[in-house]
Structure formats: structure tokens, C-alpha cells
Image (tube, rainbow over all chains, first blue to last red; front, side, top):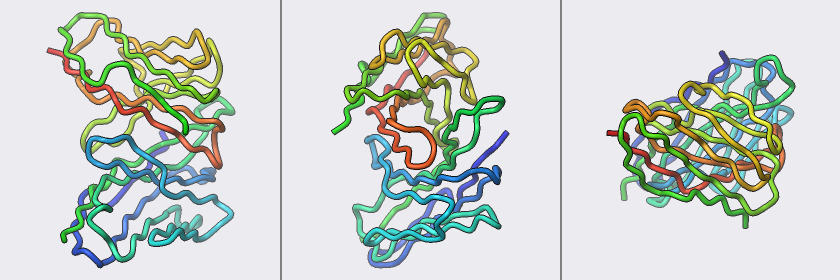
Length: 116
Length: 114
């Protein structure tokens, strides 16, 4: 079936440095790519998303890039802060087999630690 | 603010017991989802529903069933709990599906099956 891979699984950076998380997807028809952040003990929350007709999107210190040809997309966090420490999930939409329904497939997650 | 409420944060059950996990959302969302979250495996879709009384299997439906009798409520049922169903269960809802979809998650229900 369709899947989303995510790397690295864990990432440690010094406060102020940049962090990059990379994902690849298998379904060439995927057209929406959200990113969720889950702080320890809390629920996942959407932080940024990108559609397939856009190559890059930025929101303050976070940005996402998409390469549809290569089927990969990345999350970039600049000037990292301790409160950026969390698990980050990338995701991609795909069609549920045999139906017209979209579903979201999540990557396995990246645990980011920002060291003060 | 959309609220997705899961009735139980922590449950401990015995093998073979029937388990109900309840999820309620208060924003009139059409779509509701049940995931399980395990370390290194991310969020895996168990079942979802795009309308009342409608349900579709996700990626790992075996051993689970669901019920959506009312729009705001989506229940996950473990007919006969097993130890490999020990996990964190997350419910989510969304207004649209596909591009632009924002899934709002509940706080999670951590189930331990002994």
C-alpha cells in the first residue's frame, strides 16, 4: 500500500541552530502534505501544510518545501528554541483503495530535541 | 475552538474483555477518525467515518469495530481485547477531507491490556 517515510527518527540540535526533517511518499497522486507537532503528553496539532501546486511555504520560523518529481517534502525550522522540542509527523493524502475517499497517511515521526 | 473529547485518558483491561473508547466532537464535523499511536510507527488509521452510520476500514482494522450513530460521536470497540492492542488511541475529526484538511485530535486514550 501507499506509505510515507520520514527521516531522521530522532534529531538533536543546539538552540538557535536549524533543524530539517525529510519525508518521502509513494503515491504520485498525493496532493496535500500537512505537518503535525506533538508535544510530550499532548495531542498532535497542525503546524503547517502545503499543496501540490506550491513548491514552498513559510510561516515565521518554519517552512516546508515540496519536490513533486522526486516525491519528497521537508520541514525546516530555523532559530530553534527549546519549545520546538516535540515529535513531528509528516503526512500525505492518498486515495483509499477502491473508493473516491481521500485519507491521510502519517509518517512514523521525528523526535526533535532542542538543547538549550 | 474545535474540541475533540475522548472519555477515558487511561484504561486497564484484561485479555478477552470488551472495550469501548468514546470520542465526541462539538464542531459539527462530518469526518471522524480513530488512530493508534505506537513508538516508531507513527499514527496508523484504524477506522474512519465520513457520515453518520458510515464507516470505512483504515490500514489496521483487524480486531476493532466502530459505531457512528450520531454525527458528533464515534466509538471504537475492541470486541475481545488482546495484549497487542495495548497502545495509545487517538480520535480526530475534520471538516473537509483532502487538500486543506485539518485534523483536530483528542487528548488520547492510553489502553493497557493485561
